[in-house]
Image (cartoon, rainbow, N blue to C red):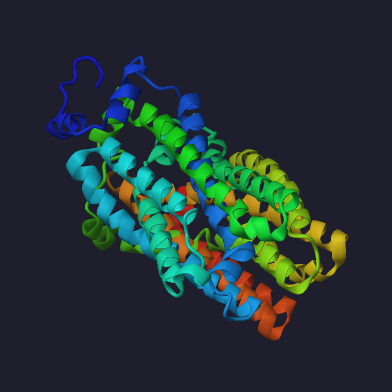
Length: 449
């Protein structure tokens, strides 16, 4: 706490219940934290979360159908795998509910430590998953349990750092600071795809399915430990505690937040839906379609994903500059309209060979970066300070659930049942939801414009 301000009871309680890692992180602090340091911590934290996410997503296509569901055809096995994939998004709001209570009772350091060790532990546990040949149906049950653990942990991993970054944004730079947390998605995809591409190309198919695929899940745990310390380095600072105590970043009770901010939560969840739906349409779904319906080497397509994600990094950065010039609401609306048009023809490009795949991935990541780069800004700006911390977490949970949780399963089912163009139907629904949300909520329009 800054000089002349006595620590409050909750601050004292949080300090008393801090973890050893948090105390170690506090030792190296000089009493304040610069916006640049916050940005680094945010990027590291989000990259670690998305790395976990993409490691599981890629394995859902390349590994689990053969390892856990060998008794059905490959398409049905992928359906089952994507159904388990969705469990984390269902469990995430439950994790928010549980860990907001931990936050209020024991402090932010305890909350983050438990949540990130649960996330890393659940991810690392997948590395020890027995196959169906060894454990029968129990293999799928264990996979579902670990996936639920990941979802609960992701709900608890919300640290408010994106809100803290926005609060420290200079005048006229809100869009630029809002895009920084979103860099974690393409960066996490690049690292996860590169790791799997190497393993797929360096190992035989038998060795990859036997033991090679397990290594990325061990790596995920190590990355989570690094990310935990980077985030505790920030949340243990007096500046963060001061914002926390002034209710700028204080977790409000979940039920109270839902009761008083329910409209903002629902509208805020639908506002970024176009980008969240597109998120899986250019990351998880294309890999499943290429793997199931072409003879292309998965490692080669993963390299195309890496190229697309690199373009996505540049597009996320560009979104910050554009949003500060034209406004976030206008950028969200324009990209939603572009995504709607993209949904009408782009999926067919996946049947267009090398050139078509590259055009689909690069074009999709350009749109994703521009839209996704400002999605967190739309979420955070829609709440009063007293409910920003919890409200933004709940809104993000619902946006991921509605926009992304079932996207791979829905898109693959549409493409398999009605043709590849039908997969754009899910994407179109997300784009229309965003346009409707921006149009009907004048309060949202005023706050994020």
